[in-house]
Figure: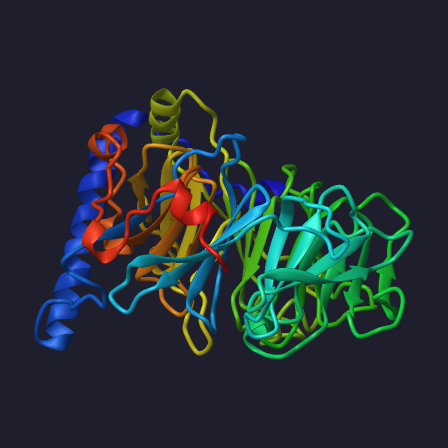
Length: 441
């Protein structure tokens, strides 16, 4: 199984770069011609033609804090950026720019103890944010975003920590749903903040005796659950409290991120140096037409992951430019209720990388595009409901970039000087550190 899963990785000599690039360029031209034939004209993009990017500069903090996490809203059309014990709030404008809205300073427990959130998740129609303090793994905190303060501490369980938490279903953050998923290294459970005392729902707890080392989780629109581990294996559940319907064997590398398409067809796992795309739809046997979340795959018919990786020559060029090894951020699909997943986004070092799902499934050459920044990318995601615009958090800036600004990876685009996004101070796009740190909520 492991060998089969990697059979599609062919190490090609770097001398074939030019040939691959010519083929890919021809494919793009064919795709554009097909579009023009079908629509009677060239493609019209759904974004501002005047400006491809809009960057907000946060300056440098005296305490050395930099941006670390990004949460993109679905109901409020805002992005939230964690920076030490502060959270910056940025509005998405109708013309696809970022506009500083406010900052939440000195995030602290209800008892007043300041902390830098280790993980954040938007919740309850984007009115709340669930935060975790890395020094207290058994509790979570609810921040009221309208009030701008942490208002509740949720003690999950005295003996079972929270290592990962995720929404009840793919679009739960748009609703008033209160419950969500929690994982320790060896347990999967539901968290219900409305419970008195411990918030862990005992009847929906699945504990494992072995050292599973769970590392990531994601949910579908129906609430099916995918769970991954640092061992590299993936489990698929149709609900909590039971054994997995499908367990995919470990492929050797720790999984640091997980996403699932809304319909559950595609599971996307991230390792440090490559992505895995898994088709969970069963195409033969007694469970034909069922997802791996709903019915188990036959033992001899496990799905073979597609391995999405940069070509060896591009890896060599990336590492030559950055003097650092590859280290992907958790990859994600574009997301939106009623929207089809078409694109995958991740980043490594100063490079944003997107894969076209269509090109991947067609087996086309080099199905990814890149954009280089001047600094390491800390977090990235698509704007909610579209794959046209990408929100990127750099150490000291936050940027929204049109996906069309990404380029095919060539020697020239990889080695190109990092772009400096234009700022329009007249529109209030450029902000000094004092604007952010001292802005009242």
